[in-house]
Image (cartoon, rainbow, N blue to C red; front, top):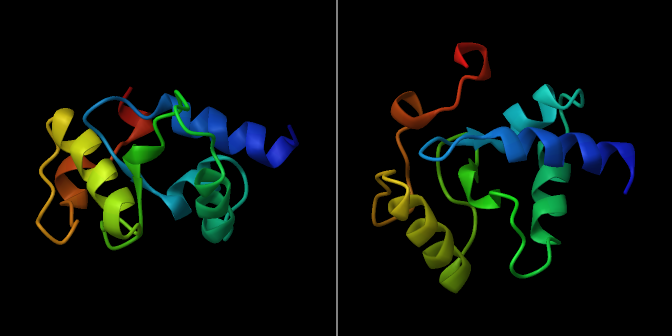
Length: 103
């Protein structure tokens, strides 16, 4: 695994249950500011059944970026953790955003 993937997966693995963050924040925390799209691409290539909490990462507007069944799967996972997700896949970032500095 290359250094980029190792660092972003490390950040994502730290997101606590019941919290979310954005692709851009993951990239920044991993030391790659401006690489939000690369984070999304890496997550889209995770194997089925991955233990990485990929579902805790959303876009900068607090929306699930996936469509169809994938959107529903991410929404179910977030709802199971107590995160409120609107019918359209929107989450209140102010309420659920992960702040690693408060850990």
